[in-house]
Image 1 (cartoon, rainbow, N blue to C red):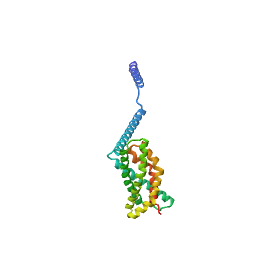
Image 2: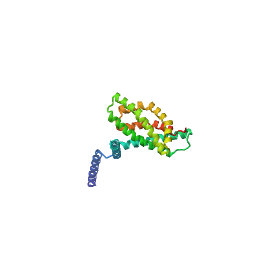
Image 3: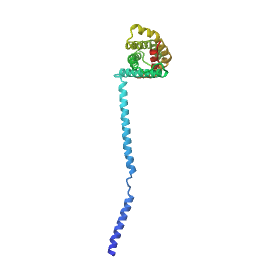
Image 4: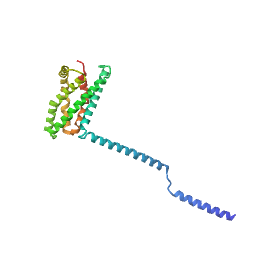
Length: 231
């Protein structure tokens, strides 16, 4: 009997010591595992965000580079001319002036944005080349030339482009210019001198068309209204 007790006592003491040793050792917790998983997922999400931001920067650099700036400016002008007409048509529908949306009209306005975008692209580059600098004297000259030369040309090209798209003859286009162009030109003098001061004084050349079109979105709505208003 005594011989059975000794091995039994030895077994119990050994098991007790092993149990205490195991309790004293740090145990892995399930929360840490979950936390590590969330950390990996968060890290992957952050990495994807950084990658997307890097792609956006690369696209921006390429779009506003000298190689692609003309296409970027034309695309911006086309898009915002289209948006301006869409807004104006929905306003006319809301006011009961027209019954339905005219896709052809919007297409024509977008096309006019292409011609205007090309003109403004080369106009701004020519101004900066002939009159470099951002002094008040230079900026004032640019504003005056922009209002006296570019604005009339831009408005005339706008009506000529739409006249061609609408299959109007030369006489009809000329009569429309005489009847409606002065309204747009008068509106230009109320908006653009201040806007162009900011443009010529602060905005880099390669962002000028982008700034121009953001400011002119409201003006594009007016342009569409004046162009398509029935006499």
